Image 1 (cartoon, rainbow, N blue to C red):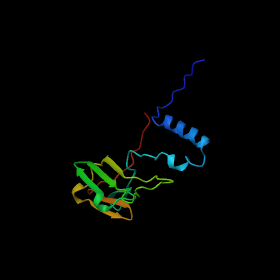
Image 2 (cartoon, rainbow, N blue to C red):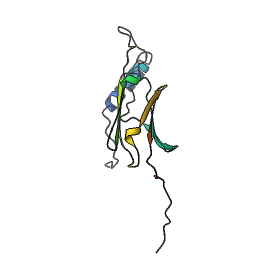
Image 3 (spheres, one colour):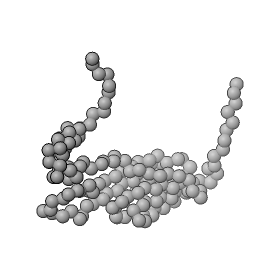
Image 4 (cartoon, rainbow, N blue to C red):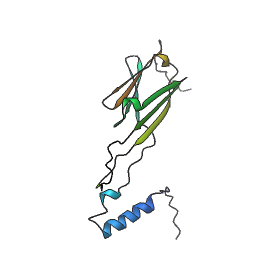
Length: 148
């Protein structure tokens, strides 16, 4: 019988299978060093309202403040950050190496009721926090839905 199951293509599946074969054949040598790193495409963000400001917060572990770029064009916020692995030991056999240099990028459309020219950015303990003031009178209200 033909299978109708649809699976997502994983370009690393054959590498994983080879790793499993090697792990079974040589369990003392090919365990942790062969693990593939986890890759994240987007920079995860928290976006919320606080004291009349739109707050955008991003965790950037291993990133120096000079390697963070924030740009606002009209209502688009662009954040780019780069971490550099400067501690790599040459001519060494790693047992496990999961950390490497990474680049993150995120674009986000901001609400129309913010003052982008008054935005501030702070970088503290690996967290980037942007505070963007809201314009006056930008409040929300509930609208009653009537059944007709």
